[in-house]
Image (cartoon, rainbow, N blue to C red; front, top):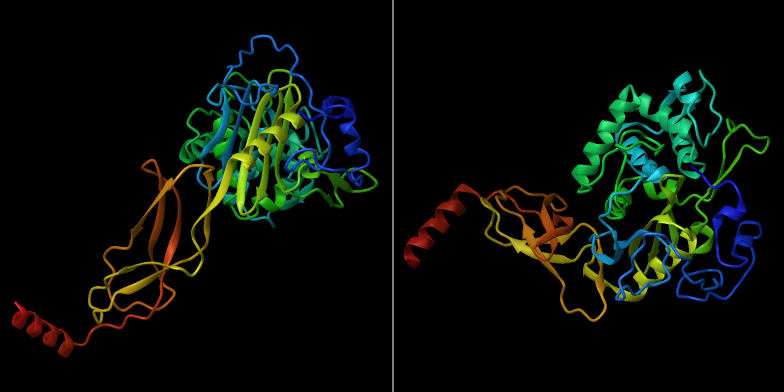
Length: 402
């Protein structure tokens, strides 16, 4: 699963030195790359056909995509819907389910089945009791296959049952071309995804509490780590190579090739890039993120606390209720495009009394008629219940008027 040697990083020129001396300073060659990366010509890749219109001719990945995480808008793609093996990028979904279906302070007992899992390992031992949160860090940072089995068994009782949950969650997210057969990405014919599906899954992950913190952690110490240093260092070198990088996961098997899902944030925009079966996965990922940030600009739909609109309240005093955005919504807009996003308010059937700060509706953002983002709308004022006498008075006034 994991790349164990510097040579297998396949970075251009001497960039692999970044792993040895990450404190070196260098002038970025591109918009966001921290290190000066020598452009390498794309090698001959059997079976790979690239359109002459592809703006990233030297990209070596068979499948690739970069999207805006908030809206899901595709900024660049190559064979994004082609079915491929995901290798250890599978663990992104394992992490999502663990965050949603367990407590980080749960104590997980490692089974003999988990301890004997093949591939990259944290050297867990049968009978060990380890905190769930710790296992998730080890699973994502050091690609521990044994940790994924321990997590899956703790939540679902077995890996097979957990894999069903994974697939159901993927389809719920919209990653409908994905099927998971295990929690770690060890190759099976019925374990597959696409670059676009992985991007969708990861974009969803960034909305799950705790996800970003785990996938962006560079280094951490745990007493249970089977090493005198008790130290784990994240295998995702993008955290050092790319300014603003905040995730997410590497992967490798012979069947899948080199895979990488990476994320980066700039000017309030969260981009997600995916490369599957890539020769130079670090270079490819940097190119994708650079291309993404160069071709979009932030479009702030609403700021937290802004009045997004007004709504009528049945049984109230008659004044329109101001609807305030619960959070700031910033999405990526392709440069040179006009108004790409449309908004609509959902706040029907409101009845008094209402307290200021109550959740009373949603502001929905649409792109091409499809919902891509939303935020809650909060009551901007108290609305008291109208008295009986005021109700009668308003009724009489309506008769006089009409």
